[in-house]
Amino acid sequence: MSTVMYIKASPMGELSYSTAVADAFVKAYVESHPDDEIKKLDVFARRLPAVDFETASAKYKIMHGREHSESERRIWGEVVSLIDEFKSADKYVIATPMWNFSIPYRLKQYIDIIVQPGHTFTVTADGNYEGLVQGRPVFVAYARGGEYPAGSAGEAFDLQKRYLELVLGFMGFTDIRSVVIEPTLAGGADTAKQKREAAVAKAAQMAESF
Ligand SMILES: Cc1cc2nc3c(=O)[nH]c(=O)nc-3n(C[C@H](O)[C@H](O)[C@H](O)COP(=O)(O)O)c2cc1C
Image 1: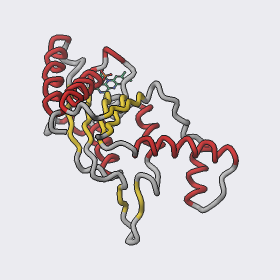
Image 2: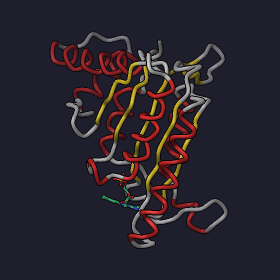
Image 3: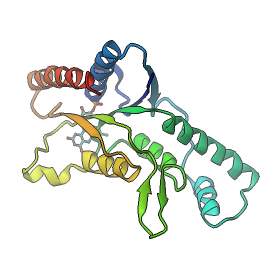
């Protein structure tokens, strides 16, 4: 039995395109893998510690081999428990909107919490970075209001897919599968509906071999 962690990064609920595509993926996955467990994490609903002075100090103190204060110990406990929850999965599904050409701040906050040396990456003896979350597939549903096709002038503005795939790769992911749904706004309601139907069908098909 495998555990699938489903991370949602849109606050739009039923109206969210990225969630609709990832939901279709998860629904089809459950049909073809009935014994597997799906664990959901909504980054807008979950309490996440702020990455502020105390959290950053706790991180640097570990790097410099210094003792944590009482409150740093408590905050770092929250950080490590979120990392352990993340690392406990065998497979991952992520639904994310494009916000200002990148990902929503709550997903970035979650990434700033879980990407930690000694937990999700390490530095090898020869000074290279090595991801510690290896051998696990991830499916990402990306939604954008506009269009950023490969080879177009708009492609350079797509820091959503590029950034997320870079940071997933940094943590060790090599099997990154995705469906992009675009444009959800710029082409009008009919286009958005057609794109949604096509993306949902494609995601459901991709889930069977995940
Ligand atoms: C704060 C905010 C910023 C956005 N920035 C962009 C953007 O930079 N480029 C774009 O194409 N669409 C942008 N959009 C539109 C969303 O990408 C689009 O509505 C998408 O469908 C959101 O995903 P969702 O439906 O899963 O919530 C933005 C929307 C919001 C709310």
